[in-house]
Image (cartoon, rainbow, N blue to C red; front, top):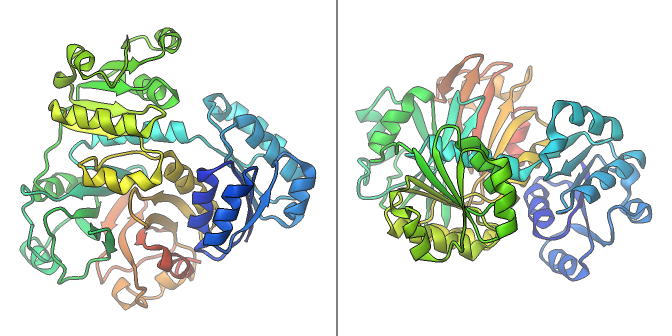
Length: 446
């Protein structure tokens, strides 16, 4: 596939690195020539310095041969204009990043499609949904649902309360023959392991588990985790994510929102009807304490500053808040955040990449989750007629290193993928895969 990515920094670069593993022909259009030279030195991706709304620049990038044009600049107008012009010049499909949720109503989506924009992604909107999911399934570090929750991916940090420390997957299966969940990966010492039967869970591991809804309670029990009944939340940062999150939560929880900008606070008070708006510097621990920080069930830091988000979340943990979620935009900070105890987090770059990556695949993929701090993805494939996975039970499929089938959704039912399970046409199959395996596993579903 010939792909053009219009970006203005790290989002476009990160997306290019993710999809370049699948052997597409990628060209990045970006106004920053120095950043492009750095990218060229680290990869085989073609680059072009310039304005993506320029017809001559797009023509130089061979827009007439482009299968997919992706515009992820931080400016909605540039992304929209880029896609409109690109479609007129021959791009087969276009995707625009937008921050203004006004564009996402069904009526306005139709207008955008008429202009030549096939799909839109709003990272802030998806981020607020991820925060809500983490608060709903509060016993897990991170949660991602497939097929409306018929299967879920849980990330769990294993501590001294975990009941399976030192036990192998084989021994756990023997002791619990009817488990409704399956471990698909273990992240340990900066390495991601696709576990085999003899592999053991160790203290400090990050365990990725595919579970059915009826397996969640037992999973949390074995991991030594408890659901947190979240009734009160403090949000730091009144930008788009903070606002959208408060809007989602204020009808069912007590919400306090802290922001240092007085004018923004006044605007927030007009948009939020049941949220207490506090005009204060979130780095002032005494102020947060006076506003009841220690009595909060959850703390969410979504300012534009990575360091502020991490620092305030650490303050909240020290004050006794059980669930803290920082927004960490610098991908290089994710590993460090996990090491200092901030396992749950959101990253808009990974959110954007997760949404867009499925459009670059030959097989039909309903959703992709690019994981925080782990060079791996979880994908939900739709099984086509006569595809390889329909020809034999799972245990007889050719072994693909660095990939594992976790579960299957068939109609309204979900199943954990065991060796004798036979996948059929129309199934949705959840697969955990490292980058080296994605193009190989995709062929199973074509």
